[in-house]
Length: 485
Image (cartoon, rainbow, N blue to C red; front, top):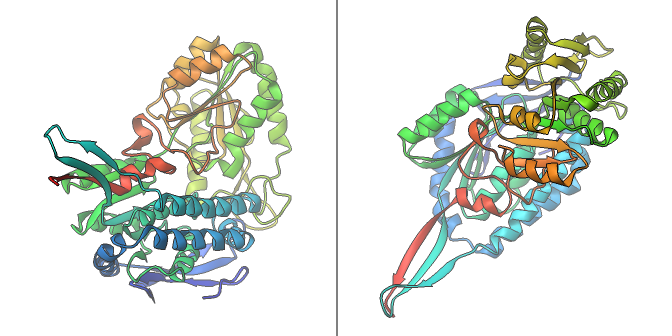
């Protein structure tokens, strides 16, 4: 099925090995140019979801018995094709989501790398053997697939996040039903199209597009779905956790962050500013790992704010597909309104707007916003308690490292954190005492490798880690077998 890089595409469901229309269609709008319709995506009802779950349930036993080599060959081929088509798929991603073309291509490459990594994991699934406490009895522990995995993915990483859920699920012998975000159906469709030609048996992978409010609860309630993997907002995640508990389903949640980047007096100023700029404003700040709280000690505070403000003053905001653009648009009107509302709230609470924060009118109609930096904020302000999910960051002035550590940990989230310092003492102490699942030293809080675990603590994550070899914990269950020879 051909993919148009400029015209309107038709994004269908993929169920039981067939491309299927939904109940209705919804336009997929380019946030860089709202006159451009990227595609027409199906909007499905419960019947389509039920059919997809039935197909996955029927296919799961056969796929569970597939050989590691079969799974390796398929996943590796999928990864190779994704990477080979990185420019084409990256352009589609940037066109529908709004991140810069370089970021879009980078995300596509990461998706391909994820599939290739889990191709390798398919042929090295570990087991264990122990001697029983009873004489002459052997005990074997092996990992087996869960069965049907339901996946609900967000709009901010429309190919990477589906990839890092789908790839391990398939590698460990599960069948999949994916419900992507309605704002970005194209990238999920393109991934499904590649999977449809990969050699997977019919029904092992299924794609159903539609409203999360309708399809999510129905997916959870279906007894044929054994586990749910979700990435999205905290309120939705909490509801999913409660529902999965009621139905005794395994659940994995990634729900966001309010990530601190600590900058100490001894930090290299260029390194600190670069980390803050990248972490807070790249990908238009629409990352759960974004550095939205900049916790800066008083000795470097003024120089840091001045240098970061100058960087933001020259940051090029524009069409995601323009190679000169350094920050693309916000994903849609609703998200832009939310970002602007937090700018207003921060001002009302006493924050000082150092730069940006306004809607931009450019040559092309789109959801453009000048990156906003607030100073003179305190950690009890809403701007520092709630996830904005946009190009908005605030500076919190602190006296020293001890206060910085306290402020960094004083949050209901715990996904990622960072510190900029030349002191091995403070770096080591922060890595140990930071209440976050991922800690960066002299690096942006956003940006992690595909071969290591991803996840947080407190209100950011629930359940087993994603990515790397730790993904096996969620996508498999353990069977213990006893043998009397």
